Image 1: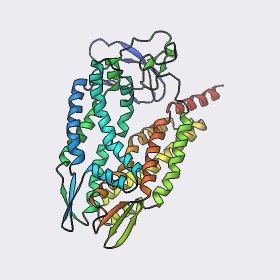
Image 2 (image 1 turned 45 degrees about the vertical axis):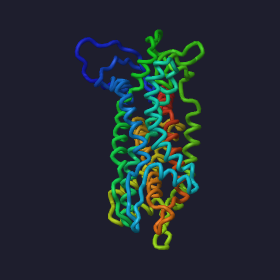
Image 3 (image 1 turned 60 degrees about the vertical axis):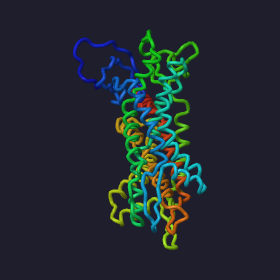
Length: 415
């Protein structure tokens, strides 16, 4: 366990199971600048108190104040054939929906509007709900899973890519809402960094230290509390039924992964964007779009798009296939490497949404009523669906099954 040096007497310790490898160890109360890591798999188990709820409330209110301006006012503007065209986040989502793809538009809307709004609203709910005696447990459980779906930072990168693509046809100006959007993105990022879910659980629902044999302690898969189930088999803190492993983890992961692999075929073969310029129709697949960016001299931007839209999705598929097969065949070699790969695809998976954000902005900037127009290709829906399915596949895969397979293999050798 990697913990900063503590001066003076050690604080009271408690037993904790690692959510990634199920290892049981003792964990002292952490100070503000300390983090605790599992001694077996080195995953971050807990961090000290980072930010108090009143400060988070101030940040959440600031986010909500900035949202209407950042979402509805122009982020960037272009001058095309003497006409000024403004692009806002809401306008791009509306254009995607009105041109026949409301499901794709809903993917963009959830990651850029729904998830950040839910994050700020949930923090306010914790404050006012606690005052009025309301149930805070569903909100605390949701906050722990929401951070992977907040993608304002990726949309900001998408803005830069869209500007590079449009600058060949029009002059680009910064919109009045861009500063507000950047400020909102910074505040949301600070909220995610300083949000300590375990600290909030301890503040609103403190629990007594469980007694009995330490090996009998079970980890709650929902709120990460280590203890004994109550008389109804539920976690004493969040009241979710406790089980040793996620139910049907392998089946759900295989289903999501196979579906994503199927969807990635049309996502890469069909055009993802269609540009009408000078009476000609120019169709771009994901890969041809990367090539056109590189050949036009925008190699760094082309590299970003290639990594996010090509390399990351296929890397996730290969890594997940490797992990699932290693579990089924009870592989015992390269255990720590596999765990590192799982953490890598968990961290990079959200960046694959970059292409959809670029398309949303392009549709807002260059519409059908101009001599130069841009529309979304059929591959956009398949690509967005594949990205979401790979994110869900990583989330549904119980990493402790990798350690279980390793332990079973070692037990067989011992026998």
